[in-house]
Length: 188
Image (cartoon, rainbow, N blue to C red; front, side, top):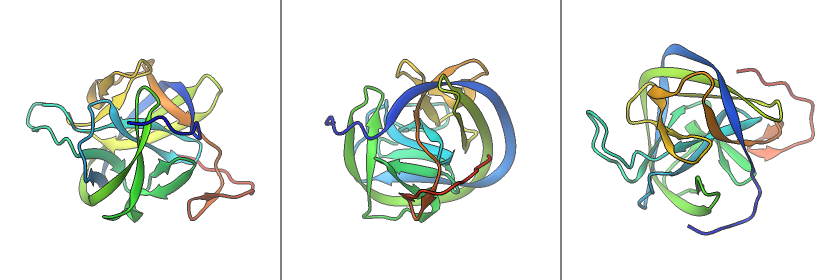
């Protein structure tokens, strides 16, 4: 890991709603390197911000560790590379992403492949102390972990209303991943 620019505005967000939403396509991002247990990618359903989804670098019931994988959630979501975003569905092998860990360190990492499959999904809606609403839609699976506000990986299935999670805030308004000056409203 290396410290890089502070392009992302780190904060924490309180979970205000949890909702099972049925099945949808989710994307696992498999990288060409080993990830630490508290390392992963920021993902979110809107340009307002995202949560740190951690690697599958731990033993869970029914799943062996996948030190190269982040189960990043529903294919419509944004994934951040510094201040730029991509949709999970647009990612492919050979591209670079920015992996982050819970101590605010970053590194560039190469995507090996993206694996998309239909799975049950759960939506988390959170609110930051700045009043920003952030939502994510992740697979309902014991192998999915997100970073708690203290940086510790937390099982997604154990998250409850009132929990505080590590987040980034950003401004909506993007065209092909680049920020644009435009009035935009996103609801998730």
